[in-house]
Length: 339
Ligand SMILES: Nc1ncnc2c1ncn2[C@@H]1O[C@H](COP(=O)(O)OP(=O)(O)OP(=O)(O)O)[C@@H](O)[C@H]1O
Image (cartoon, rainbow, N blue to C red; front, side, top):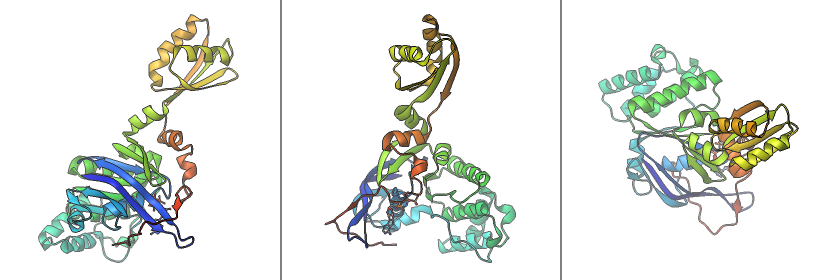
């Protein structure tokens, strides 16, 4: 559904006459039917990548195929086959959801009858039927966001891009929207490419995650793969009858543990599969007369993954817009926006 090779975008910096490398040589492959998350802190290059993939911004270099069409030579083909829901749409006003949907469907060339049918089926799909005749400006943030998504799907695209779909929503509306997005994927077969800086969103929604930082993809995989390969589970053990150094000695001899850290009677270490080591841990400690007091296993989060790669927490990075983006004095040409 999406293939990119060396996709890059530079922006000219007015204040210092340099170039900002917002996206640097991104290679990704997204298969039909996937929900893929582009996860990274503010300023990582997520929106810029999405704007390129949706033809709103011309790449400085690189190539891509989106929904079967070449991005550079056939942008109108791409546009007709994808849906795009931008960050925080400006939808408001006195018309109703059904009127807005019918209007958009007509603009896509559907007959009146088809447009009305499509509008009502999307309202149903996104749980907006009861609100179809309300004025849009009276809808809540979550309801408006669902309407944005319905509008992005009006022409039945097989691939939809969602830019930070739940930013600004309260926790309950976010979870509700996740359910709707998952259902669109499951039941309508829509491939979803979404950007987010929320760890829980990537975890809950995306089958596969690309972690981006400083304009590049620094890791990719299923959330479970990323968490198990990069960080490992954190196991914390304490004993009733010995201090931490005796436990640490057993752990380092008997297990392929890393990041072993001792403090008074507690030892913390990481292993790929925490639950899998518990019985061996109990036996190994018992063999040398150590009386186990507590064992706690904490699965890694995507934040641990991000930290292990970048040395920064994604939460801390949030808001540090463009802090890590490199500015280069450039010979490269900046191509103007096409959208
Ligand atoms: N039109 C532009 N002109 C100059 N710089 C830009 C432009 N658009 C984006 N940038 C810069 O490119 C970098 C990447 O921005 P981008 O919006 O793609 O990040 P993001 O990961 O989507 O962040 P956010 O989560 O805040 O939306 C940032 O440093 C940003 O300031």
